[in-house]
Length: 197
Image (cartoon, rainbow, N blue to C red; front, side, top):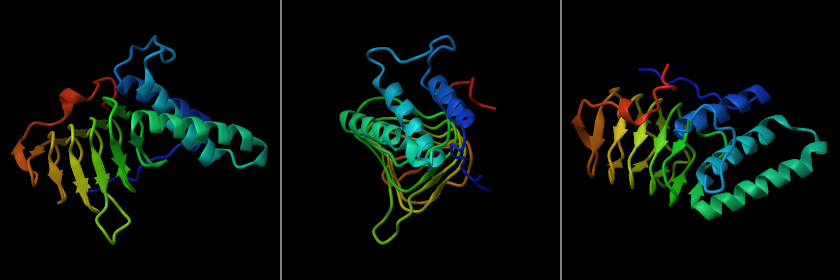
């Protein structure tokens, strides 16, 4: 199986596409234009994408005050929600389900990933790279994905699982400590059908 190169935001139109797909992944209706008072996760995801945009696209010093403003707001919202997510690590269609500790290291995550609270995606000691995760993956509450491993498309990682070895079979469910295959159920029921190609 091959893993596609993850796209990053390179233009204003990319930014709009990412923000639209993230909104759909969070199960908001097409007609909802902006986050409400209590939509902090959606606000965080918008700031994540704007931070990626200003970092990747706005190179002139004239934009420095705006860049610093976006980076400051993103940092404050990250602290408020308990999220640590590096820029340019997750493709469009991101759905963070709940507030709570979420730590993501130097990884690559594909489109339409749904991540529950308490998840940790990190590297092993001595290795700077974390996992490469495919499209349409659901990661359950408290799951740990450790090491420079690969997770195929349409995989479900069960709550509380510890994944330390690659999952190369698409459309399966892994769970347990250490994680092992428990079924051939894919992630379809967790991913908004409007996003799946």
